[in-house]
Length: 146
Image (cartoon, rainbow, N blue to C red; front, side, top):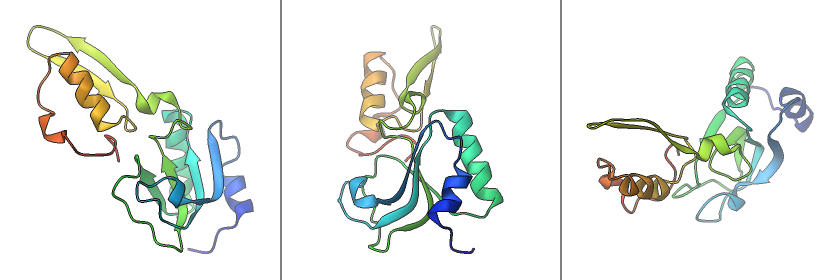
């Protein structure tokens, strides 16, 4: 992979409805508050935009890293090459942090939870609905897709 410049990332991410930050310190996005800059950090607005970013990056062989809430992650001082995609941040689209009941009947409940949903929030949701099966996530920091 050749070194990508800010101009290259700007061109790649043109038309983005979400937010893109360049040379963004990862220390702002990790629980340990350490880490150098990411070449580009993207907060997609929705699933379609996320898919488009992934396809563009893959076609250009740009490294991708999907970041959850940034808990228990160490980023080196030199930072991260490529694109970091954040789904748990409030800067990303709400769709990544939504929890929706899809279907309920006498024996089953089906829910949809976005990758950016905090595990603690998802656990509280299931408890309020009287659902079981997520007890193992008690005390685990982070997000569902992180």
